[in-house]
Image (tube, rainbow, N blue to C red; front, side, top):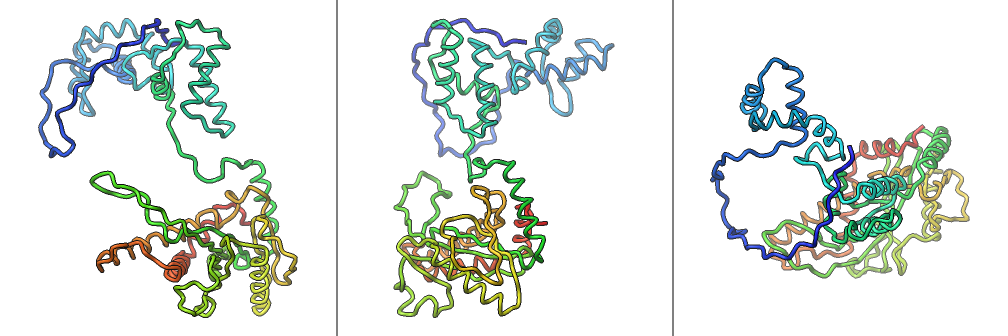
Length: 416
């Protein structure tokens, strides 16, 4: 049944809202509001429930039906016999309005719109944008409505100029605001399927323990939490944007995790006290941007190739097609296999949750350390140096369970 059209109304005059007497800091109370004899309107879903009961009990009187729902164990529905009689006469209209929009069953009265054709065009456009994987916001919704009104030649007195209709429209069609995460929305799913099949054929030649994945991630090692719990609004603090790069490599069954590859900015960080990071057992390199380069990657591949040659192993190393992974070196015991562009959010195991797990372990250790500093009387409880951050990152990598790694490999869908 088409939505009921609303007559054009003049713009309402502003009104003065009376301040509430209740303070935010008032203690809670168990007082119940005074009971009134006024009956609340039932939703369309409630009336459909009543109609279904009437159909299954045709010999019960309307008064007995009202009494049955008044004392119902799963929840009372309060209405008079006269109200039921009126609703039975309007049953066809009620059942039709119950399907006006996705949220109509929760409504107590039909939704009134100014132009049903404009609203229908608008919801079809929103669904079209969802199918394309694109984001729609409030200003875009209002602008698109204006354009539909122009195309449909809607008279000026029937056009909606306020912004209040957006909330009602979104509620009626169950449209909510969602924050988009990651890069998966930019990927062609058909290309993902083809890539998974290609990689499966490559990995079928190797045992699970000889299938490796390598990837880098940035870590803002000194950054304190930017949200938390408090009894009042807290002022923000200057964010520490110090960043290092961590590179990880692990095999498909989780039995082997290679040491973390650290990339920082300083050649000899002051916190190491004239002892090089290499002397402390870290695989550490540095450049101005603290990021992976072809030189660093080639050096790492040579080191890994020598290690595999000594173990008399031949492995497959999956990497993304980042320009820093280009190398002229041809390893003898490593088969370098590059993922197709823009698909790593779906097919790369380290992106499937392993790196996320490492960072979660790091943040937990970071917060525990802050508590220790607070108990020790330190003023800056989030103060930390590079050496401590690297040790915590190493412990976080060691804390990742083999089962987690195996699950992420399986989730990526590239296992033969």
